[in-house]
Length: 83
Image (cartoon, rainbow, N blue to C red):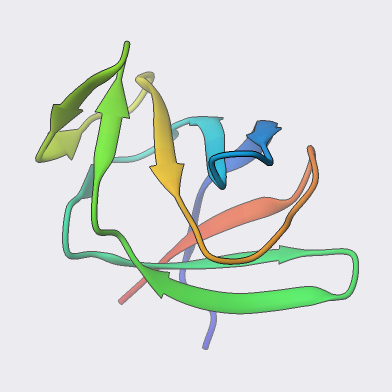
């Protein structure tokens, strides 16, 4: 399960379980993402996307977004969109 890389985590907010990344491709609510880094390699369905604290249903290349995830991650982990 490869997928296309859509960004790299530049911040992780542990208290709320949210990653921050700048997208290199579009992303929609309902898409499946794969996060890879360190000893982590897992997939999640995107339940919500936020831009500047506002919920959106989609984001485009260049947008800086926040996405809630279920596992702890670190800055620098890669994010892929799974087909």
